[in-house]
Image (cartoon, rainbow, N blue to C red):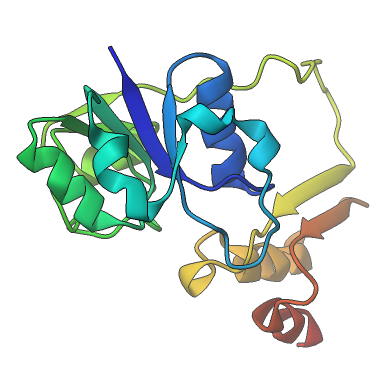
Length: 194
């Protein structure tokens, strides 16, 4: 079975997710979408598995499944895949995935039960995305430092950054909160200026 996906080849959450699925042999072909901010990493994939939007027909040739993470960016390619009889699976993120989707996939692979509730009217299944195995786990009984990954501010601050900052007013323990996000992003600067 040949599985293809559409996504970034850069240091972003979705870029790393696609790379992990490729490195573990789930995805064999990638149609690259250039990120508008982050530099590309063409060395992540062998040239023979990389395609670009102008090569969509070649990308789809012989593909059995098109696996999408959160968005397709090129919904015309998804439509062409469906017309060719290629199964389309979408791992949605309810804060970011277009709703309803521009092209209805054959299956929603929901990583959370919340996603299952949102997409229940379509064929969906619950499969949590596994955590990376190169990050060691250890039991923590007490935490004084917390990290919030704000991303790029996303649509309406989908990751809840303003709420996390507001909640700090109610924290009574002496903790440290690190909020990660690009300081050059105007919406992030405005948020911290308040």
